[in-house]
Image 1 (cartoon, rainbow, N blue to C red):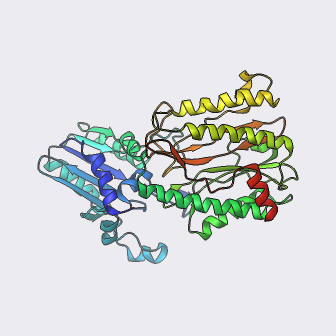
Image 2: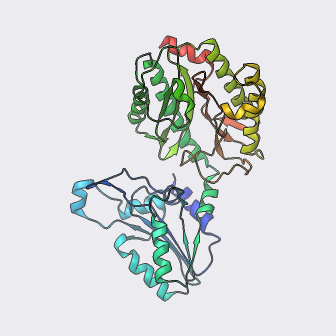
Image 3: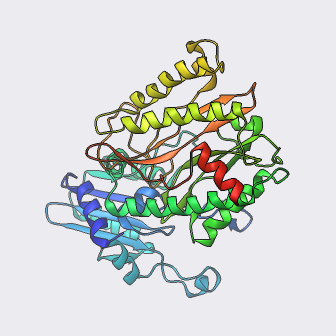
Length: 414
């Protein structure tokens, strides 16, 4: 991202922060896996969104008083011995260039500067960004910091600005959309690599590896763990075991996406292992495709995700009864048990857009109707990434083959 973009994001967030406050944001710390190893680091996405810095153990501070208004970025202390083992850390010049924050100190000075600022100024409010963790596996850095503040400075009011940052993130800039397009293009290449190698007897994990190789080849990450679910297991929404052999005449459902500079693609496609759909599979597939087409046509500013989901249900109530997939329309919940759309961006299930909220220009959402029959061992999901425009929408992933005819033609030429 351009430095000017990052600065404008912070200005939008901080302009309403009251005088007599300090904002403290954390990039996140490394998490121990076992012995002396750690899990691969994933930067706090809100921190990255506001600073353009992707490294552990960083802290951003904004001091806003009657006399002072300044930003400080705290980076790792220079440690030449550590750099011989794990490589160089972010330098002061790099931090300034990336973030547009011109005051940079080593992280070892954070506590003394924070304490001194409290002592010398009339501060009554601390703003933090603390994401709610429904799993509660561990306290995040903001929660630890808040706990410490409550113990040492009980008079201070701590305000969580997580929802304000999330709201900013719902509207994507042109730069963000370009990053997502890059991720979608890598995803397209990965899907085509899967199809070129797919045949009965290969394993689900080998198809996943075909995709992931293309991501690595293009210096891209994975937006999430690849789902390669064949046969009956395609009716499991988040099947990630990927251990079975592909069976002739079965379908395999892929839910996958590349990530470029943390911006995600999220694509689902369902393919015939043998290169040709059976008539029954084709019936299922075209019902899902019809539902997806109707939803995409309906996307425009002012529409809600709930309304989009009802379009899928209305299509299924007619078409699935007609095709004898269900007997009555009130059985739709048995063959469709998730929502059709979610926000997409720096996270696969991106922040800020709840079901009741209305779509706005600049939002990017998925459209992913699914149809699942455990009895018939058929699970189908078709998913594209859609940009909401002033008057409608643009399918950012329209280049990824999708119709029965396109899929069969590609697989039989490969």
